[in-house]
Image (tube, rainbow, N blue to C red; front, side):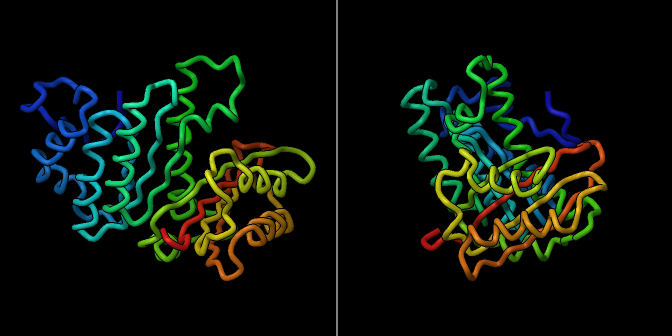
Length: 267
């Protein structure tokens, strides 16, 4: 069940309370039938994240509709979606590819996480339930890596304008996540982030990079410097690198680095 403050039951009449039957056309029509309600729910938002699992009906068909409405009200619109595991079948894969293409046309920035890549950072004993839960956690990390930079006090704070300078009209984006403890933890976390299996390509060509460094109150300025320098060297020489820190003492000795790279030539 969702903990969202506002929940819209789209497609009430169209599907009679059922799902979209893995049909993106049904998902699209369901969202369009409730466009006014969606617009009301988004009213006043400066930034809207559209998250979905691509390949099925509701997310694949409905996400572009929601994104188009979000942009129409002037919100910075960021898509964060997963592509299905290959074992889910060719039809779901092809629907996902088509859905990603449609969504990209409606958002400022689109981050796509292929679920198959999650298997590369998972133990072979992982259950199917855990695998899908991991996919959800990665979506959350993508959203939180951006929002925490704006909303959580840190040693180096960012505001909405900073994030907008990287994300507005940026097209495709890549996301990498890394964490480490102990000696050289920050630079190790940064290395893991820029070499993350979640990245479908190198961040080398990125003209815009959002860098989030999270750690406890003992996070050192030289640790931040070294981690940021590593990411800077991995990106385009002229890249606009926006970075901030988030202090979270629940992390203990752990440092987490989230890198979101955007603004690639050719989108």
